[in-house]
Length: 173
Image 1: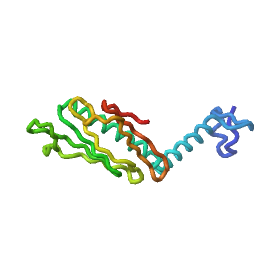
Image 2: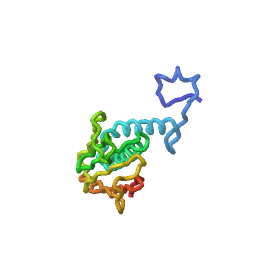
Image 3: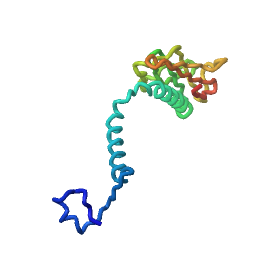
């Protein structure tokens, strides 16, 4: 069956070619459907970078805080030193501590510069805290209750809480 929808100009060239797509009036062919889906995918891919990424700021900041608390605890147990996290409203700092004379007073180690992590502009921490992990991975001094760190996102109005137990365990509430 020759395709006749291309008009009389192409008809001599198409007499030997069978129609790949027989069109009836009931819908679209599979190729047309695939072309439309491909165009939708391309337009969606172009629009994706313009999606507001600030909706992910709170989750990212919370996950990063939890990871850094766990990393500080891991460094303390693995390296046999104390590590301190000083948590402020817009950032937190991780420091390695040393006790050079063995008197139990730990001070910042100048050979390891403190690492400061700044939170996204819309995220802030409600209550600051100082967490110090000893070489056994425990908080020092041992608090009677777990520390609760609350992060708020001013743009979305959402908040998340992170609990740090005396044993050094940390999780999102």
